[in-house]
Length: 331
Ligand SMILES: [Fe+2]
Ligand SMILES: [Fe+2]
Image 1 (cartoon, rainbow, N blue to C red):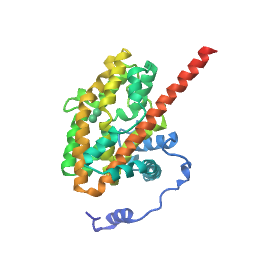
Image 2: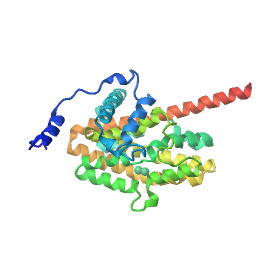
Image 3: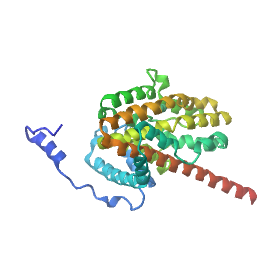
Image 4: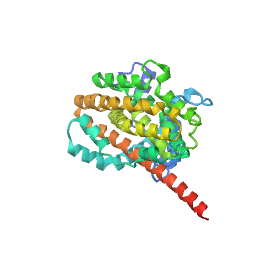
């Protein structure tokens, strides 16, 4: 579909705006280093994105499409995407060279991933404080679980669209409001004494936790990135079942079994979801348009990369705290 022929001054203006190559906002506002680990940039992006989700009590909802806000969002998104493409380039190239059936390729990338073993640590060794730290950091993405991927739906067609709708039916409670996954996560927070309110920990979580949530909105809200969004979603689902079992076991070990419902739900559910996401969503997308394979793999690589960084950050944070405690005990 092409832009319609304008039929008056107003539609002419819209067509002019959409056809023109306008200069982006000055990039000076962003510092030169990594956007991925820049808390200021990630918080700015999260805040801008939040206008399309639940918004803010003290902000006029009309500002959702404010031109300056969108301009700044695009500026950060461009840097964020460039950085993600650079850090995942080797992994994407290797996977594409390996080739094979799309579903197998996606699931194989996740299975071969040698990230930090955060969930194993949570199962066996984490203290209650560390477990709560993990739950708090994850709350940024889990309290809106599957919302960003809902934006993929109108951008898909045929089999891929049907498969995403089938998967999201589960994520959104399968007809039962008490099984809505984001609310299951809120109950986990409440059961561990944490604040279950949406956005309660925004001022505390790390840049990487924000980036892990923001990448889903980046892919969900930019139609040209729909295939990356599908790949990211597949990797997210495929790296959930086994870790969920470990986190549920860790919660039980700490005497927090009532908080494990969310994770127990994902042991079974995501073993099925990973197949739907990798084979039916990603597989159908690439079957319909083989040129999308690289973008699907890029999305997978982004999920794995951010997950590894966030896991490593938490483990080293806890190591530093342990080392400090040992030093003060010794003195
Ligand atoms: Fe879920
Ligand atoms: Fe799932």
